[in-house]
Each structure stands twice: as C-alpha cells, then as structure tokens.
Length: 128
Image (cartoon, rainbow, N blue to C red; front, side, top):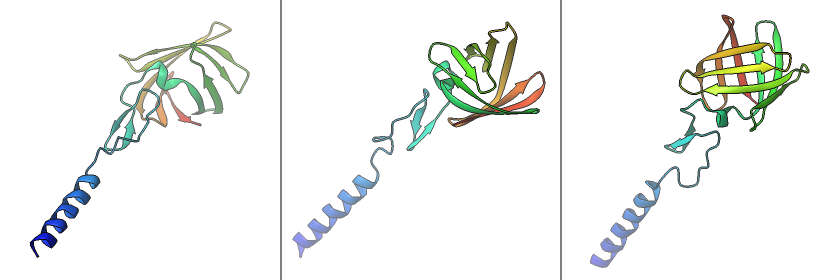
C-alpha cells in the first residue's frame, strides 16, 4: 500500500510539474516581440516591427504598404520612398520619392496593428 501511495504521489507531482512548465518554451516571436505567458507582446515600436506588408485604412480610402528592411517602402497606389521609425516618440516618418513627407504618430499598437494620426486624421495599419 505504501508503494502505491508513493507511485501515486510521484505521478501526481510529475503531471503538475509538466503542466506548470515554461509557456514560452516553444514560442517564437517576430517583430521584436517578447513572449509573456505564451503570447507574443510587441512592446516597442521599432523598425523591425514595421517590416512587412500592412493594410492601411484612412479617412479617404485604403491602401497596402510594404515596408522593407532597408528603410524603403512601396504603396499599392504606386507610391514609393523611404521611412524611419522613432522608437522614443513612437512616430514613423514616410518620405515619398516626390519629396513629400508624412509623419504618423502612433496612439496604440500591438503585434498585428497600429493606430495613429496623420495630419489630425485617424489612420490604422493592420498587418497582412
């Protein structure tokens, strides 16, 4: 009977130990994200975070922007240029090939989207 109790206790402890393992052990986060309790959290607005394809929604329409690792971007409406990210102020500056400059100030972001303002109007980028 003592052996049965011992085996039962060892099995119960083993099951508890495995269920309380590191929830981030097999999680790979992108975009400079950090794993917290098994979920990727994007806490910093960085250039690495921006890289990729984004669907843009703004007051007068929609577009798709592609941001590259070399600081260049293209838009679905034929535009192209360069971009920079200021992590401290969480702003992104887009400089079109025509010389026009747009600054997007972010107000909310996570790994899949960020919101902000452009010339006072709301703007949303959602990762494609």
